[in-house]
Structures are given as C-alpha cells and as structure tokens.
Length: 57
Image (cartoon, rainbow, N blue to C red; front, top):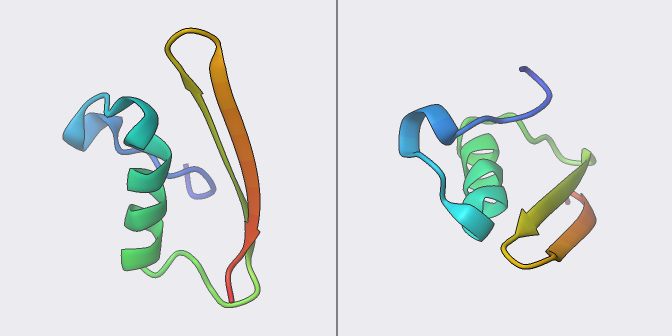
C-alpha cells in the first residue's frame, strides 16, 4: 500500500484519468521525492494501454 497509491476507495473508478489522479495524490501528499523513479501504467476500454517511466526532478 505504501508503494502504490490507491484512489478508488475515495473517488471511484476514474478510468484513464486514474493514473494521473494517483500521481497527483502522491505528489500533493509528499510521497514523491526529488530523484524518485516511478512507473504509471493504465489499461483503457478497447485494448488501449500505456506505460510511462518517469524520474521526479
């Protein structure tokens, strides 16, 4: 739980915006520190998917 933010229990299923919602939650709560590397991965309707690896500057 400390490594993967979960927002489903508070705001429900946000679809493809879920990854950005979780990123915002992590950033505003101070869970991302400069130099941290993190991965965003999502699956949308109709075989759409994407993954992005980022480093917080």
